Image 1 (cartoon, helix red, strand yellow):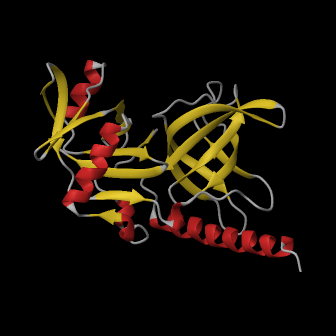
Image 2 (cartoon, rainbow, N blue to C red):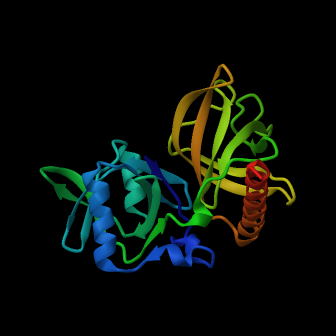
Length: 258
């Protein structure tokens, strides 16, 4: 139920061009969405220090201009988060991704126990537009090369299949033993092998992991979000997505009865 993102200095990189229309600036609308996250007991991934520190947390309440969130159990992680000027948060509400940044975090007491508090964000990315919807490949499987996950050789890539892909992230499929992943894992330097464009190098944050059965065998499916997608990578990715839309439209027309 969650996701992730941040760079130092913390900002919402998605606001640069392609995602402007997804940004919500209305204070009442932002508070309403945050309250829905709280009411639905959704989790968030909080990230700071260019992704070097992160935690899975939960929003607890909104009190005036303050957002309260749960604290990590690891004291060292807590101390590192408290030193961050801002934290980036990502979560999923009704299959729609929400991203926002806020800070600095401070330690306080909420309901008789420790909690972090920070300002209610002034803007929030509400990614439900068409360009962020996931598409499944039409002409054959796509692959993603993930580095640094092979204990025997960290430089060797692990090949994962891309089940679906959109402007905000993708889903990876891999045999269970090939690529152990957990929510919150950061995967830098991944290479997307997409037809018709040069390889796209991205950083992925694992948002959720589940096991599914595909063609009679059990595989691991990892839902991932793009982190700080560079402008050049955005351009190549969206060029491919537009190509994929055209292919899907052409295929539907072929299947329509005359």
